[in-house]
Structure formats: C-alpha cells, structure tokens
Image (cartoon, rainbow, N blue to C red):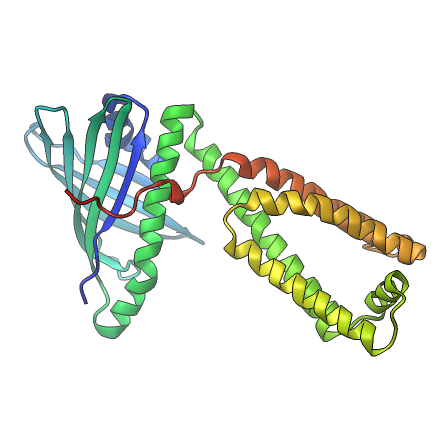
Length: 304
C-alpha cells in the first residue's frame, strides 16, 4: 500500500533571505527543527558540488540516530521562488527510515513568503511489520515537521528563541499529563474501586443522602472525573480546561471543608492538594496562551 508523502506548508511574515538563512545554516536549522539534534555540513571543493551533511537525533538515555544527507540542488525561478532538494538516509536499524527524498520550497508573497516541504521515505522494516511501524511513525514525523515549522515561524515573526518555545511546550504537555492522571486516579481509585469512607462521608454531609443512593452518586461522580481526565488528552484548547479548573478547585475545597472541617488537619488535605492544583492550573493557563502547534500548518497539498 502506497502512502501519501508528508506535506507541510506555512505562511511566514518574514523576508525570504532570512528564512533561507534560518533553514540552510546548520547551527540555526538544528535549533528549531525537532527532528534533528545536530547537523554538520561536510566540506566540498566547489560551490557547484552537492552539499553533503551528517545529522543526529538524540532519543534519550544515550541512544541516538545518526544519518547522512545530500542537498542535490538549489533552483531559483524568475518570480523569486527557491527550491532546495534533499536526499537523506541512515544505516542504523533503530531508525524506521532507511532512505528518503524531498524538497523545501520558498514562495515569495506580498506579506512575506510561504515555506513548504514535501518528502517521502522508504521504511526499513519489510512486510506487515513495516506497515504497522509506518502506521504510527508517519503521523508522528509529520506532526514533528509541522510543529517545527510553527516554531520557526514564531522565531522569525516574534523573536522567541526555539528552545524557550519548546520549554513552554514541554511544560504544558507535562501539566496536561498530570491533570489526566489526577482526574482519572481520583475518579477510579477512591470513588469507584475503594469507595473510600471519607468520600462517602463528605458527599453524605453535603447532600443529606445516605445508603445505596450516596454510593451510586459517588460512582457517578467518579465516572465523571474519569471522563474529564480523558478530555484533557483529547481537547485541544487547554486554556479553557485550565480556566474551568481555576473555578472548580476552590469550590471543591470549600465543599470539603464545609462537609467536614476536621479534614483540614489531615495530611495531604484538600486545602494543600487543591491549592497546588490551582496554582498549576494558573501556570498552565498562562503557558497555553500562545504555544507552538502543528495545527497552524497546512498538511495537504493544494490542487493546481
């Protein structure tokens, strides 16, 4: 089964020469492109020769993927359009990519330029296993390309350094993962599985419901908390969720205190726990206002 090539397009309000510099200078390119940790040009005898280079992508725990590349030509049109064609690959078995080809294109516009890329590759693994690997890897590398393009755009338009953008992006992702874990755990363990006595007592005091009815209500609340945790993974507008939590956590804290004032003397009580989550929500709200995102890019080639 033949896959569609990876395509990413993004308008940038910047001079074509500046975009060319940020994308064709190794020490600048490696700063914004999440697909590479380092890029090194190899010396060449004449300007007409293809430009060979080596690249690395650190995965973590000392593991990295190293490969080679070759810029096979830069083409200029009379309207100012520039195209840089690439041939790349790696011999490392850990990499799903064996070899690939593609190009970058720089299209001048009245407000700046359009920066786009299209590339495809041969998957290293063969047969059904290779198709399964590519099923997961192709969307991931496409997403990484689009995210990198938006980081480049923000660097050029707003002057924010790529490393600071990625720092904010990673912090926001960690906060999202934490809230997913907190809501799912709080809904599943103390409410559905353990049906903790403290949960039943607080709910009974707040609602004046007892017996099996309060247990049913606790199960419903637990299921709702689990669903809200899942929403944290699926819903893109995290600032909306953070804003909602900035209201929810004080309400939950006051409700717990009103139901059982003695709970304030317990270790890890609702005041300290919910206050910590409230502060994280505030931080997450601020971080999430202007994050780089792959969603800003066009991912399908236009007809014509």
